[in-house]
Length: 391
Image (cartoon, rainbow, N blue to C red):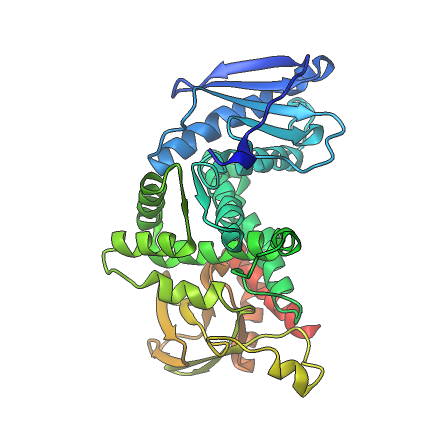
C-alpha cells in the first residue's frame, strides 16, 4: 500500500451497514443526527463497489469499506484505501426530498472515490508526472459506472458538457499545459492537480474508448490492473496493455502521446464538395498569440499535429463511420445522395469542428426542423463549437 493511502479515524459516529453481493461489509459513518440521510449513499456504495469489481475483473482487496462523512471537512473527498472520507454534503441525501441533480452529485463523488480503490490505490502511478492516470481515469470511469447503474441519468451526455466541453475551453488557452508534465518539486506536483489532468485526461480516455470499443477497453483495463496490482505503472504501460488486447494491435501509445505530451487540440475544418469531404487539422486557440516571442516559446514535439479518429454520421444513416488522420489532413467520400454529415459523433473526439457555410446551414436547418435526428450529445456539441467560434 502506498503510504499516502493509509488512514485512521477515531469517532463516535453512527453507522449504517450492508454486505454487498461480493461479501464486502460496507458502512456509512455519520454523526448520529444525520443517520436518516445515509440510505442513498450506502446503496450507491454497495452497487458501485460491485460494478467496479465486475467491470475490472479484479477483486476489491479488503473485507470492508467505510464511507465517512466528516463535519467541517476542509479537504475534498479522499480515496484512502478502505476508508474514504467526504464532506457531509457529498454523502447525505434525503431520499424523499432530494432532487435528481443532488442525488447525481452524491453518487458522482462516491463513484470517483470508489474507482480510486482500483485506479490509484491497487495500481499507483510511478511518479507525479503521470498523476492524470489516477485523476483522468477516475473521472472517466466514474461516469461510465453511473451510466450503467443509473441509465436514466444519461451520465455520458452530462459527461460531454461537464467534462469534455470544460476541458476544451481550458485547453484552448495559451496558459494550458500538456497532460504529462515535469513534476519534480512540491509546487510542480501540487500544480498538476488541475482540470487538465482530470477533465482533459478523462475526455481523451472517452475518445480512446470510442475507437477501441467497450470490449477492448474493459479487457485492457482488467489486464492492466491485474498485471500491475500492488505496483507502480506509467502511461506507457497502460497504452501497451490496450495494444496487446486490441485485435488489430493498434499502436495506442503513438496515438495517445500526441494527446498527452503536447498541450492544446485540433480544429478540424470540414469542406463538403459532394461526394468528397476534405478535412484539415490545425491547432485551435481561443485567442491569437500576442507576439512572435510567444510562438518561439510555444513549441511542441509533434508540431501541434495529432492522430485523430474523425467519426461522422450522415442524413442517410446513423451508423458511425471513421476516417483516421495520421498527423495529416485527409479526404473521404460519401454516397452521392448524401446531403449533410455531422462530424465527431457524440463528441467522443477531443477536437472542435468548423464546417463550411453550406454544411452549417444544413445542420442549422436540421436542428430547427427535426432536432431529434441528432443525439443529445451531438446537439450539445454543435452548439458548443459554434459558441466557441463566436467568442
